[in-house]
Amino acid sequence: MVDLTKVLLNFFRKESCGKCTPCRIGTQRAYEILDNISQGTASLKDLDILVDLSYNLTLLSNCGLGQTAGTPLKDILAYFQAEVEAHIRLHVCPAGVCKIKEGVV
Image (cartoon, rainbow, N blue to C red; front, top):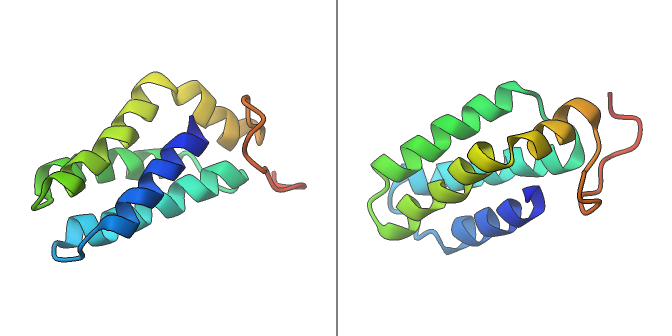
């Protein structure tokens, strides 16, 4: 699910028109955090940032694209938090999809 959410956020950040800051900066920052999670270099504090980003994207973006970009973040944290935390705490991808960097502790 981490990889799928990363793919979705990559789409949102590339399709953003850039007119509103929440969408332009929020989607980029969310993608960067998901990339760190998929590599095993994120921290638990990053999950709090993702919660804030999902909330801000939904409420503050000018168009439907930015407002929808918060949904995958909310859903991964609501339904797949154990998988996300495995990437962060254990440095493993339960699905075997993400390329966790060797020697990350």
